[in-house]
Length: 98
Image (cartoon, rainbow, N blue to C red; front, top):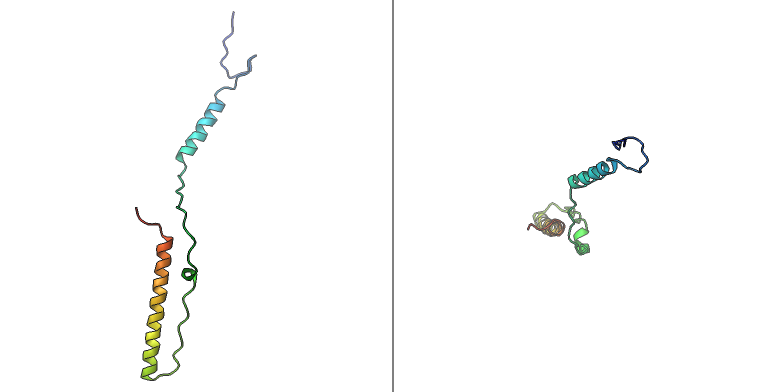
């Protein structure tokens, strides 16, 4: 009479059982659930003037009206230049919307 083998025990044949299939299925499921990586497009190097810090403000030397007015105009001009540079840096770094 021939004996039926369930594949769980040792037999004369080399059987691997269901473990390799289960391991392969587990790896496949883990890869399917992994978050996908979004690759950013290649960008050219940033211009050197965009990565420079904003200059420090000039000190107010004199308290006369003319000196204060010149100082205020210089300060406003420096702020405008710095704000434009920082906006250019933000535009260069942020991805463009589709």
